[in-house]
Length: 81
Image (tube, rainbow, N blue to C red; front, side):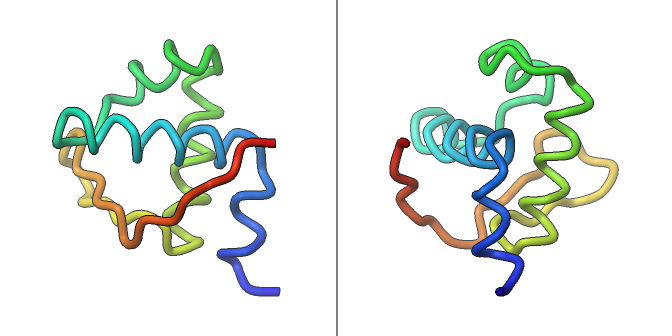
């Protein structure tokens, strides 16, 4: 299996991806890690791990050392379980 199919099997990665998509559609830029953490009620550490998984899996791209510098590589509807 490729990285993309495995990434969204992780609950935190899936939840963070869904929130990123919704937030970016509504607001036009990415939320902060703190906003993600507060909205999803997960730790900042779990947010960081999920963002890294999404980046490695090809769902997002980040610019290092720039806050909120996240781009969606492609948009894919994620079905709620």
